[in-house]
Length: 304
Image 1 (cartoon, helix red, strand yellow):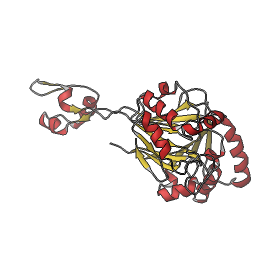
Image 2 (tube, rainbow, N blue to C red; image 1 turned 60 degrees about the vertical axis):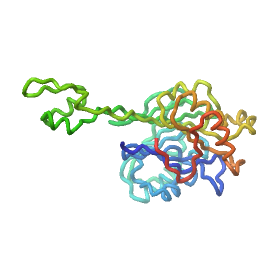
Image 3 (tube, rainbow, N blue to C red; image 1 turned 180 degrees about the vertical axis):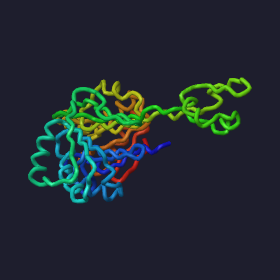
Image 4 (tube, rainbow, N blue to C red; image 1 turned 45 degrees about the vertical axis):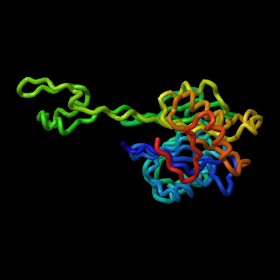
């Protein structure tokens, strides 16, 4: 299967610590790289990950809290210093474009590349990016400011040709696309060869959902049907339930309930409060509800 991976650059919450960087990750899909959130230190983490700066084609910012966007200006400047010429598209709540244009006018007015800001509506779920193999949708979340997550979905692919059978029945290569699309094949002797004998089923499309920051939304799972891997913020444990409610964050148990109800295959936990020196307590709480829960960590790479 083609690569579909999540590279964690930062999985801490508001305060950078010696253990965790603020939120940032790269979603790698079929050779394309998409940056999701850009907290302080993101470009350092990109260098450590050995992901190529120049291959990032778009940035997706969930909301205007510093731990999710303070690294963006520095990274844009670095792109300019590296001689980037390819356009970079930034998807974010509209207020970010105003702030970034002011900073760019002051510090980065001679770029050789274009920064294209696209405002996202955080209140609706809609496709904001599409190419031949992928769509990316917004996921409305419930935080103290306008906030949305992002859902990366592979498009279904056609069936695979069984080359041994195609050769046996002397199917010309010019007919392969028709057969992949479901056509049968008729030999020179008039024998109809059913499509099922000539093809193998395509892999199930995969999907990755990024949900940070948000308080628990009982109906969120309905938006995540068909998701393979879910990253959901788990800032607190149940010992800090009052803080989670106050600051519109989720506990690890909340994240696990969303994963369970959505029927995902695996849950990635992140956005840990600095209060926890050992996040195993969060993992244990999540596993009580959803056993296939994982703690993310900087430099961790997870298959979707």
